[in-house]
Length: 357
Ligand code: GDP
Ligand code: ZN
Image (cartoon, rainbow, N blue to C red):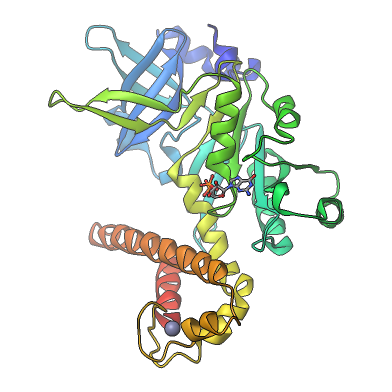
């Protein structure tokens, strides 16, 4: 294996020269876990940490290594660990920006060639949302490809493809079915050795099914690795940068799944306007539409005025956002404590969720 198989580009050589002179080795970050990194180079995987000097000199969160980054490392052969001295320039990156703070960005994944924007050809189909994902993809510097999944549920695929084509000039569109394996072979042309692909799309559109299908095609389930948790037990963890057997790479990080939710927050009310409208008639303002008395949503479902599956989907997305918001509020509090910057946008999000439910 050589570095180009991990996505190394000749242009990086120029940046790396000075590090190479001081005996460092380039490696790619494949996983990040609370300040520890798992990095990969031509010889295998190493557990790594940034140096004290790095920590001292880093001024922004975006300075720290993220999944997909190329880093300059010093390895310690004995215990198979490494020290990260520097992050090489990113040629593309997905960032989450905090509203009103143009210079505070949080990089979620770096150095990606292609982004698969996955939507489903079911009732959740929403062109405006696809447009928002497209903006995000273009901003990242990666090339977007629209995937319309669940074509098996749709009787007029051509109309939807046309619809998206009009909104996304110059972007390739593929209608597929991850479930029955239709159209998947078309996607293989993007899975080029040394290239990195990410999947973006709302919860439930079929990203995991699609990734598993692609892994299945490659006949190698590398998505899961077994790790010793130090107590003699083996735990199965999800790897974030997956190398397919044909050499293409897929990044599937929780961070990217969170990006999708930030976008969906803006779209939730719009996408589920019918449910939200009925929900305003519930007796309790914080009604969860479960077993509460006077729940207008439940009554509408029972009367056949609202689709039960659609309401379930609505609740699923709402719960996922609330969970995320709780997690992020906690992170915000911790930041505040340490004198860090506040997460204003988050607060707004939490307030909005509280107001609506
Ligand atoms: P994710 O949240 O985007 O990762 O979505 P999942 O992969 O978990 O899929 C959500 C649901 O959609 C699951 O029940 C899948 O079985 C189903 N699903 C995925 N792909 C297809 C498809 O092509 N056709 C149909 N009918 N269902 C699909
Ligand atoms: Zn209700």
